[in-house]
Image 1: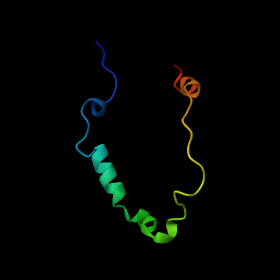
Image 2: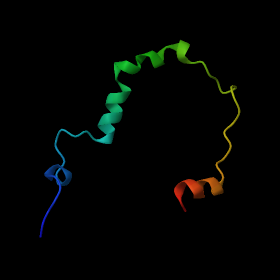
Image 3: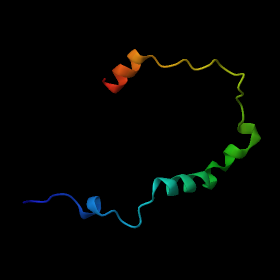
Length: 65
């Protein structure tokens, strides 16, 4: 029996981050500090129009159902 692939595919490295670790790091990354500035709040709930529900026909086409 021939086995192909990489050992890393079977046994992930200890250096790989979990999704929780990625989210934690991204939330605290100083690159996004500008988003805390009140000048970035340019939209309100009164702007635009409500999002309409996606039709089942569209979902069927996108999801290839």
